Image 1: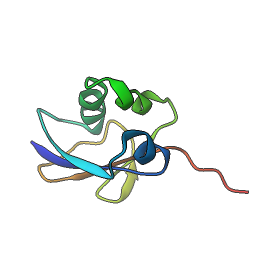
Image 2 (image 1 turned 135 degrees about the vertical axis):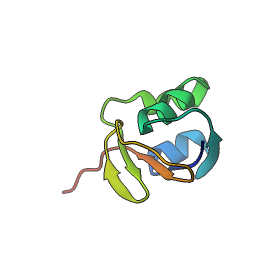
Image 3 (image 1 turned 45 degrees about the vertical axis):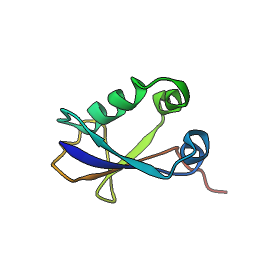
Length: 81
């Protein structure tokens, strides 16, 4: 399955890219996260417990089922003031 992965805020800064295309045996969004963590290095930033995610611009959880061509986004939690 192919998905488009987007990074926002601090994750984009740490990884140095806005996004990338990934191919793998992904069933749920958490599988994409695990594949990225497997790359090591700066991708370890995605191991944060409070990581937020979206599928096709809709907030979701890591157990969200994926389909071919989905857009997945990762971003840190935001606070207001």
